[in-house]
Length: 614
Ligand code: ADP
Ligand code: MG
Image: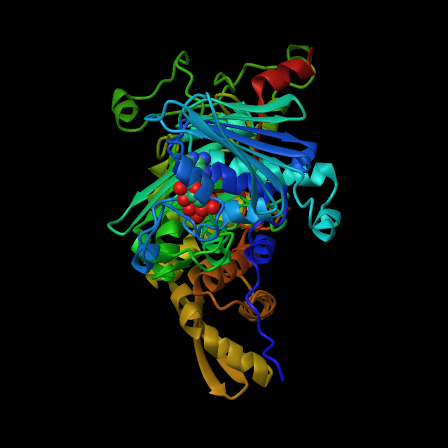
């Protein structure tokens, strides 16, 4: 029998390689733009026709190629970027495999024009299906222009698989975005079918993001910056309140290379501490800089995957960096509580000096009636409206929660101006109103602040429980008459799994027999709650959201506990309770959204009020 194995001709081998590297016009765009970056260009222009199917042209003002290199660059494994195997582990360029141009030339008609600074004339080469068709000398500016026509002209199957022009154009814009984002110091344009779609001027990363996504991003972005000796993280995240329903704006780069990495993506999403609804996604534009020897990017021909030497470390640093950015943003006071200067308050100088006194716009003279037409008919009624009470104790007796987290008071002054009443001073008018026994209303400088009491309390407790889980210091309250908590064997083993975390929160559980636990102590925040019901809910949620990541488990636990314990809607609150709640809310890392992603407060601005009465 004859030998059957033959070596494939280069043109066929190149076509096979092209199948991996060049899947669609956008892949060619990416490769050509990356080559221009590697050539040190400061201006790169992309021109496409018919979503790249008819024409892709990339013009750069980079270093150019010699006549010989211009011929060689279409050969497979022809690269100027690495020369030995070791180089693979210190890659500083976008390309290194030397396959892109060979692949593109195998499946398209390519014209290359290039000139180096030291050469007087440039070289023009026409390559079609891996064969050099023409070569000539031409006058031209320094730099390189690649013109790719009729992509997949000789691979009809591929060409037929391409999507609509719109879909292919979206892919091109996406690749263009990825390349341009991390190179803000370079100018770019994108022209499609004769129309200029993007004109990006050299500038900062923030300016680049605005150039690509719109100038309204100015207010949406939070800077992220974190440096350790092995990892540097820089970029921007989008504020939680601008999270979107699609995964659109998630750009994660490693050494400026766009990377898909589910695990590290998780680090970022998690850092938002469930501030965004389940069906929304945070936006981010982050670059991680690591020593090239700490990563392996040679896993896949398109180089959008990367292996880290120590991915857990990167996860932790990334998570911390994003947390820090969110925390700093939320700590800066965003709401100015009222502090009218022109009120003649009759407080002693001493108390003025030690405690800033802030009153709302409600006039202090009790005989003053803001509704003059009612002044005669119903004197004093309005005062009831403002809850003019001197003794809040009466309310406590009518069943409100008297002590709303008194031990959280230490954190109060973190972010918001203090707006307490002086201690012991009886205040003539209430600052806080309750609407429908569910919403707290108070005034702030910009207008009316409306707070959902249940969601606010959920956020406060959630952050408190997370802290306790972290520091393992939840306060416990001993049960005088321990209740028995009976579960099925499966739940019993789950409960045992969670015991350390439950104890950190203040639960004291003792296993009496394989399926019964005695509840000897409960978290002091849960006073008045049904401990059995609470544990059942915790177990249920644990089963639904079970994950391997410890971080997630803590989040889930804190979230369940907070939602279960927080003051319910339709609960009457005293003024003091309302005040504490608002104070503590704005001392939270995140005051805007509850752990379930719902908005906690709204502000009706004075402008909005004015238009209502226009
Ligand atoms: P790689 O980028 O992996 O090296 P390519 O096939 O993309 O492989 O390119 C082959 C070589 O051609 C590059 O290494 C580079 O030397 C040269 N080259 C490609 N594009 C340009 C360009 N725009 N300017 C200068 N040289 C280029
Ligand atoms: Mg390349």
